[in-house]
Length: 482
Image (tube, rainbow, N blue to C red):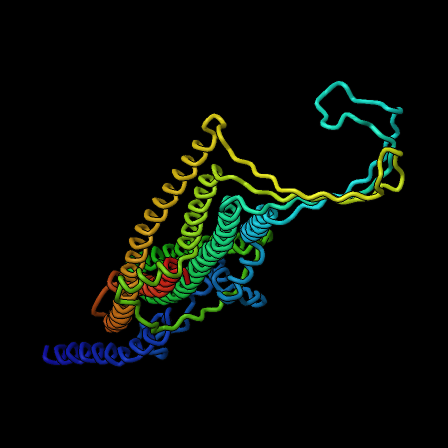
C-alpha cells in the first residue's frame, strides 16, 4: 500500500511537472502567434512501452479523405495586401466612375450659368430680292420697306447688370460642383470601408480554417493513439467512442470553415470588381499587439466635423441653395443690357445711301407683374434652403453618435484581444495538464476532449478578436472621414 501511494504521488507530481514545463511554451506561443499550434503533449509513457501503431490501416476512409482535404493548399495563390485590395476596388468599382462623371457634369453646369455674364456675338449674312417700292402690309414686322440688298454684319448682346441675379446663380452652381466633388470622396470612403470589412472577414475565415485543420490533425492523432490503446486493452471502448465523436466534430468544423472561407473570398472578389472566382493568399499585416483605440470620443467628434466629406458636401449644397434663393429674389430687379451691331452692304438698293452701318444702344427691362411667378419661385428656393439646413443638422447629430459608437466599439474590441489571449493561454495550459493527467491514467477521455474543444474555441476567439479590432478601427477611420 505504501508503495502504491508513493507511485501515485510520484505520478501526480510528474503530471504537474509536465504541465508546468509546457506552460512557458504555451504562453510564449499565445503571445507570438494569433493561432498557436495545439500543444502536442504525448499521451503515452514512451514508444518503447507501446507496440507499433496499427491505427493507420484501421482508420476509416472518411478520416483519411478529410486529412487529405485539410492538408490541401493553394501554393500558387497570388498574394494580396489590404492596400492592394483598396486600390483594386477603387479602380474597378463602377460607383467611382459614376461619382466622377457626376462631378464633371456639374462643372459644365457652372460654365453654362456663367455664360450669361459673357457677351453674345452673332454673325449674319442676308440677301434680299424685293419688288420695286414694295411694302409689307400684314403682320407685325417693324420695318415695312423691303429693299434689294446683300449684306453681312454682326450683333453683340452683353448683360451690363441684373443686380445680382446671375452672380448668385453662378455662385450656386459653383457650390453644387464643390458638393459633387465631396460626394465623390465620400463614395471612395464607402468603397474603402466595404473593402476593409471584406478583407478582414476573409482573413478571419482563413485563420479559422487554419485552426480547423490543426484541430482535425490533433483529433485524428488522439483517435489513432486511443485506438491502439484500446486494441491492447489499455483503454476502454468508451474512450475510443469519445475520440471518434471528436474526430467527426472536427471534420464538421473543417467543412464549415472551408465553406466560410470560400464565401468570404467570393464576397471579397465581388468588392474588388472581379468576375472570376480568385483565391488569394491574404497578407496579414496586422500587429499582434496593436495600438490602443482612442480614448477621447469628443475629440474624435470634432475631428469628424472637419473631415467628413459627406458633411462638407451637404454644407456646400446648403450654401448653393442659399445663393439660389437670393437669385430668385433678384428676379424682381431690372436688367440692363447693351446692344450693338455693325456690318456692310456691298450690294444695295439706290435708296440705301451708305455701304456700311453701325448701331449701339442700351435696353432696360423692368419686371412689373407676371402672375406672382417670381414670388412662388423665391418661396420655393427659400424652403429648399431651410430643408438643406435641417439636413446638415441631422447629419451632424448622426456623425456625433456614430463616431462615439465607433470609439466605444473599438475600445471594447481592443480589450477583447487581451482577454482572448489570456483565455488561449489558459486553454493551452488546461490542455497540457489534461494530456499529462490522461497520460498518467488519472483521468478519462472526456477531460482531454473537453480541453481540446476549449483550446480550439479559444484559438478561434483570439483570431476573431484581433481582426474584429482591425475592422472596428476601419469603421472608426471611416466615421472620421480619413
